[in-house]
Image (cartoon, rainbow, N blue to C red):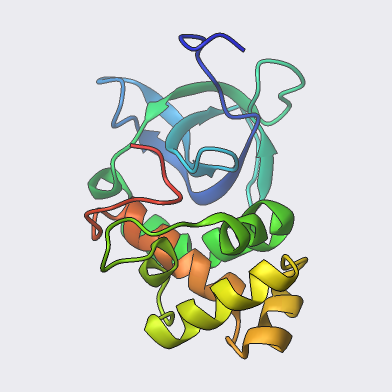
Length: 185
């Protein structure tokens, strides 16, 4: 892939559905608006729904250039502040769904994250991981890489790692973090 080639989301998860909505991205645009989060890049998106469609919160939609059925177009990116209250409250559980649905990708972070500064390790940015857990994770991954969230939980004793990663992603999306490890700016 070329460095300047744009990457688009293929799938997104519904955070909120406004059957008679006003676009935040395109002024004057009205219709069935879906606020969603992209699966790959964790981008907040505004989508224009096809007529007479219904959506479940957390539903996974195809939004790529090919094979869209419920979405007419991707209107653009949203900031966290532009999300509805419903979308904001749905975000943590949808992030957890994304993390669990892409487990190998997120387990890899536990195997690959490195120190960011002499005093701060990338693992410590994940809620619930302090110096002690970080040292345990680094020591155990050197012996044998982690294979799943269950593996991390069993070997390290860290409870619900998927939920902790989802919590970190939510913090990064909402702008509550200075350093991002999961969400591209």
